[in-house]
Each structure stands twice: as structure tokens, then as C-alpha cells.
Amino acid sequence: MKKPTVPASSMQSLVDDIRAWAHELGFDQIGITDTSLEQHEAHLLNWLQAGMHGEMEYMQTHGTKRSRPTQLVPGTLRIISVRMNYLPPTARDPQQVLDNAEIAYISRYALGRDYHKVMRKRLQQLAERIQEQVGEFGYRAFVDSAPVLEKALAEKAGLGWIGKHTNLLSEQAGSWFFLGELFTNLPLPVNEHKHNHCGTCQACIDICPTQAIIAPYKLDARKCISYLTIENKNSIPIEFRKAMGNRIYGCDDCQLVCPWNKFAKTAALDDFAHRHGLDSPALVELFLWTEQEFLSNTEGSAIRRISYEQWLRNIAVALGNAPGQPEIIDALQQRADHPSALVREHVSWALARHLDG
Image (tube, rainbow, N blue to C red; front, side, top):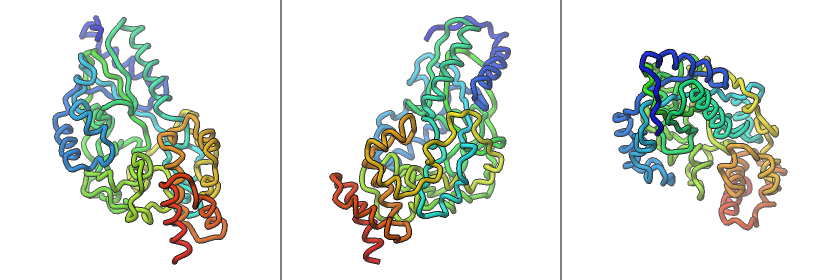
């Protein structure tokens, strides 16, 4: 990393400038922390040892690089942690969607543009603003794209605390926000971390459809609907299919029930406005999309993290949980001979729910 030449006496003034520039670029809050994550590393290693990462082999492969920022980017002294609100301002009420078994629920973070691109571009612009002020310095920007313990870093940087559901919570903004990081060799003053304010509340644990939050602050990803519908590339275990309901991409239940989200703010950026009616689409309509329609309607979206095959698999499960109306059964029968064995298996399960019940 290029060594900066900023006098220590100027660092606090620089932080004030960075905060102002970040807000101009659409970030809702920033914080700064050092690279020490020993406590979080122990939690990570225990979680991996228990196999709770499921098929996310990359978690195991990266090992301690995730909890040791200086291994990922040598020379790093500080991490500028940023958050950006994403809740779509005009999307249909999430609970109304969940309560209607004939329409699809897509996690609210995936309704707009892919956040990776939106935030990474703005983090790069932030780095360029800093460079204009201080000259060349070492940095790298990350947005959920490398082995980074982003929630742990955000907690240390004073953006909030990690709740019992393992998401970051803010007193001012709940949890409907994205996180990003700018690793840097600037010796900036650090922020104090926030105290935990979950108290005795365990609403997130109680509401989880698959009981994936097996204890406070401990999530078994293998049971989580977000994992099952996105990270999991294979068959969805039968014991979790009914509990999935109409959730076809991700799950927000633990956020919807969290009392702190009464303080949540909607997204300021147009990038996160919902597109293509995906805030409350009919299951049958989505299931009958061709692969080209799927690719066209999810272009530039985080939904592209899954394949068309996974898309049909997830919707087949939701249709199996929907009311047994003729159009739903007909849609399933149209996919009964699909070339994919994965799709056929889930369609067969769904049809059996309607025809053998």
C-alpha cells in the first residue's frame, strides 16, 4: 500500500470531511475501526467447525483471512465502514405479501438494482475524494465481495450492534441497510462501538419459520430460508419446504418482527426502488417465465445470484404451499417434464401436495 503523508494533527479534520463526502455520495452513516477482530474470529471458527455454513465452502476456504483484514490487504490500518438504507419506498407492504399465498415474496434487498455495483462505485468515488485531499494512499473497497467480516467491522466502527438474529442493528435505522468497507492505511481516529440493545427480546428467534436461529446470536445457515433459496444449489430438504411458504428468494421475517425497525428509513437512492413488479408478483406468472424472460427481468439485480433452475425450484415449492386452484395445478403440470431433474423433483412434490391431499 502507498504510504500516506497526512500529519496526525489533520486526521480528525479529514474524518469530518470523509463523513460529509460519504453523505453526499448517498451513504447514510460511516464509522471507523481498527483491524482487531479476535473475539469475532473465535465465533467464526466455532461456527465453521460446527458445519453451520452448509455448502458455502468458500467460508471454510478463506478461514482466518475473513477475520484478519491485514491478511486480506497487507498494510491496512483502518476500515471505513459504511451503511446505506435499501428499503424500497413504494413497494407493497411485506407482511401483506407474506399473507397472500398466491404471490411471491422476494427479500426486500433484492427488489432494486444490485447493491454490489451501486455501493462499490460510490466507495471508489469516496476514495478518490480522499485522494484529492491527501494525495496517494493505500485503499481497497469491498461490498460483500471478499472474505470480510462486515457486520463485525461495522459493530466495532460504531454503526450498531449485532442482534440475536446475527444482523446488524442501529438505534437510528433498524436493520434495512447494506454494508460496505474501505480498507485503508490512513491512521484515522476510530469510533467507539455501540452497546447491545436487544435486551430480553427474542422476537426474531420466535418468528423464524425454520427455527434457524438456534440460540441468541447463533444462526444455522443450513436451516435458513435465505440460504436454502439462494446459496443452496441442490434439493431443498423436504422438512423445510412447507415452512418456506411463498418465500422464493430470501427471507425477511426476523427483520419484519424486530422492534428496532420502527426506526428504519426507506432508501434515498432511486437504484433501490422496486422494479418489474417484483414487490408482489403472482407465483404462476413467475413460474411460467422462460429463461430469457428470467434473465431479462432480473438484469442488474441481486436475484442473478441464483440460476433459472433454482428460480423454478423455489417457485415450485411456493406453488406447492399455495391454494390448490386450477391455474396453479396447471402451471405445475406444465413443468412436470422439465429437463432439469432438480425442477422435476420439486414440481412432483408440489403436485403431490395438491393432488394427493
